[in-house]
Image 1 (cartoon, rainbow, N blue to C red):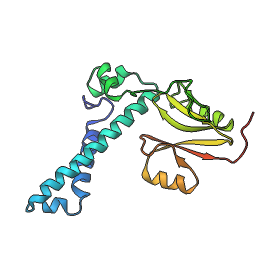
Image 2: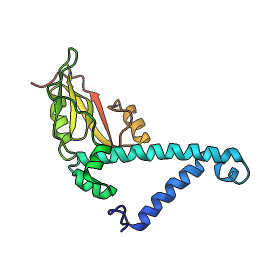
Image 3: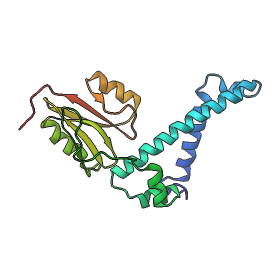
Length: 194
């Protein structure tokens, strides 16, 4: 096991590093071949690497939020990342969380909390039948809004391909980017249960 990850083998760590490197070198057309004789290629490599770094940073933030939603502590995350629990919480904590009594506009909103990845879907299913639509979420909470119809809610591992398939079936992604889960909703056009 790698001392820096704790949960991945050295071979898995190397495979991930190789995959990221290959993606950076292969995505801009002709990048690898042009590095030897085109000075502009060096700048394109910097730009491609920056995009990859931004994306892996976003994935790390989403993965940390997912680990928290699954019930893991800041101490555990800090140890895995090689930082203190306070540093992990400062870097990856949700900056603000809606007030549980928050309402906005004519439709009532409420915060369902604390929820983990183990119980959130059952809670969302129950609220969806009663006419509550998922409108936002974060670590250990979901925000639902009162509606005149029943709602279905679905959690699926995030991928652009899955998003296209889900949207083709009438589902709407709740947030534009999310990792490791995509949360979807769709109206059932039925009145809410009492």
